[in-house]
Structures are given as C-alpha cells and as structure tokens.
Length: 417
Image (cartoon, rainbow, N blue to C red; front, side, top):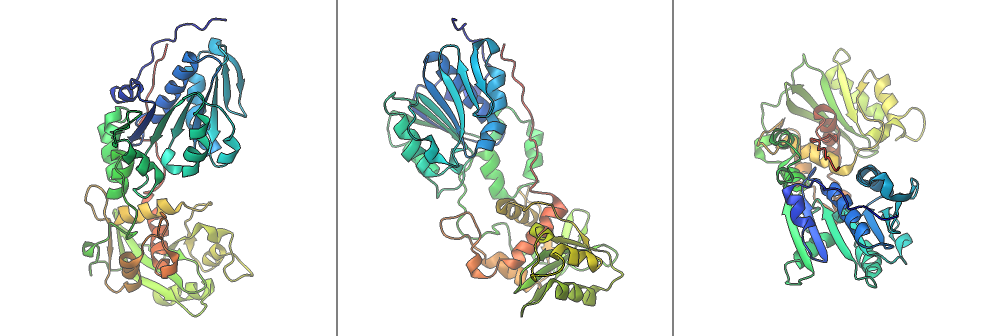
C-alpha cells in the first residue's frame, strides 16, 4: 500500500528553524512549553516516511516520561491509514512502508544496545546519563549515518549536555545549535509567563523559561540576603502558629512562623539535641506557645510512615496526638522542588521578598549562608551538618505557598489535516 503525501504540518517559526536545518546533529535548548516534544514527533514522522524499512527512536529519561510526553502526540499526528501495527506496551508504531518509530526510556540504557538506527530524538537530554549518547545511541547511528536531535531545558553547566552545547560552536559542520525562550515558542501567553515569574526564584525562572544554563554550584539558598533579616518578623498571636518540622534524632529542628497576607514571618526556631524525640519536640512547642494556640505543622512527608523513635506512633501521629494539625502531602517531595520553594519565598523573579526572618533564628540564617551543593551534584551537601533548618523551612514553604507544585503553563492545539 502506497503512503500518501503527508498533509501540511503546523510548526511555529522557532520550531521551523530547527526543522528546516540540514545539520546531521542538532541541539535545541528551549524553555518550558516551547513545543519541544511536538517538534520531536514531527521529526520522527518525517524521518520514518523518508526512509522506508528503517528504525527511529524517541528517547526520554524514563519509560513513563516517554509515554506521558510523546505517545499520545505520536498517535495523534500519524494518520491511521499509515499505521500497519501499534503496540501500546512497547510504545511502537510500524508504518505501512516498513519503518518503525519506537519510544524508549533510558533508565536502563544498556537494554537499548545492539540496535541500528536511522534517526533519534533525545528529549530532555540534559537529564539523561552521558552513557546514553556516547555508549549506546551514537554507535547505533554509525552504520546508517543516522541523524540525532537533542532537545532539552538546561540543567546547569556541569553536565555532558552543556559540553555538547559548547561543542556546537567549534566549527564542526555536522553540528548546529539553537536556544529559544518560552515566549519565543509562541505557545504560552505573556501573562502566563509573568505569572510564573512570581512563582519561581530568579535562577529557576531563567533556567525553565529563558533556557539559561544556570550553575548549581555554590550556595543552595541563592536568593537569601540581609534583606530577608528583619526584627519586624514577630509573632502575631491571633494567627495560627506555623511549624516547619524536620524529623531527626539529633538535632530535631522546627521553624516557627506566622503568615500574614502573602508574607511569611519567621520569628523563632527550635533546635533540640541530645537524642530528642518527636514527643520532646511537641512538648517544647506547647511549653513556648501553650495549648490554646492553633498550631499547623508542615513536616517532612516521610514522617507519615516513619517512626523516628523506632516504636509506637509515627512522627505525624505524634504531632496529631499533641493537638497539632498536620499539613503534608502523602508522597515525598523532590529535593529540587523544595529548593525552588525556599528560594522563591526568599526572593522571586519579580524582585519580591515573601519571607522575613528574625535575627534570633541563628540556625536558619546559618543554614542559608552555609549550605552548599555536594561537588558535582544538584543535591545539598548533608555532610556540612547545616541542612536541618533549611529542610524544615522548605517543608513550611512548600505547604504555605504551594510554589513548587506543577501546573500547566498554557496549551497549544495544532490542526494537522
């Protein structure tokens, strides 16, 4: 059965620049909701039509991401008449011309070895291991002289993807690169981007929406400054007492705050050493603030199942039995989300401070000024011993501001035929 001429496909101007390039290896760095994954699917479909009987891969960091991001799009843009077979489990389309498009997760990259490929898209490539490209995909393209399109939001300058980005300017004619912001993608209204500016710290906003390679080395609390320290951060007894809680045998840490309008005032901290228990912590809170006060605890989510003391009630249940209301999600939070929430509360991308800390909160201030990333990682260095107050504050920010929760930043529809 002959394949009909493909219908006109709709691409934004910026997407078209990448699509129309004849470079064998293309690297696209773009902001959120640019339309990267849609472009990826169009590229794969074009390749599969042009090369009958060949194999093409779409690769994402995980199988789940491949399915969630691209599978529905791929099935939507390929006319049913062009599909010979479809495998929902293997995420594989075989076209009537014998070509196949397969969607893969790279969490087990070695399982992809041994294939011969005519083309591949690596979506969110910055979040894959370097071995995926250098040891698996690149050799698979050799015998067919296949092409590759790398698409990603940035992930700092200490990554293989950044080195690939830099290689594109060495003069190798096979390589070309592009960088586009979210607004340049044309899919997200300017007012949505401005809303995001107030929900993210400056570094994260630049990375996620302006496609900037932001270095994660150095201090974790990059938004903290002396402007966040103020004696005006006092208790307002008529408001609920908010507690950020980091469960730990030594030390047990709590951050005490009130929230007025959209501003968080941290006026006290609790730092118990010597093997203090969660029961000890709740007793100390009650000693300082009494039983009449409404107390809302925002603890580490894992405390809902964990028993720091080894026996008896969980940490969350101890808080509840002490009369506290517990506000925590059921599943653990991503470290990056917590860091983003902290930095956004301290200073968001609009230049607004949403948190002020009293000078007496020495452990929290020390944590902001001292906690750095572990070398070569995007994770705080736990070996420094100054992370507990930061974590307690992070749980509080996540619950009170809801800053790091995922959201849909605009939608785009395409009419393909």
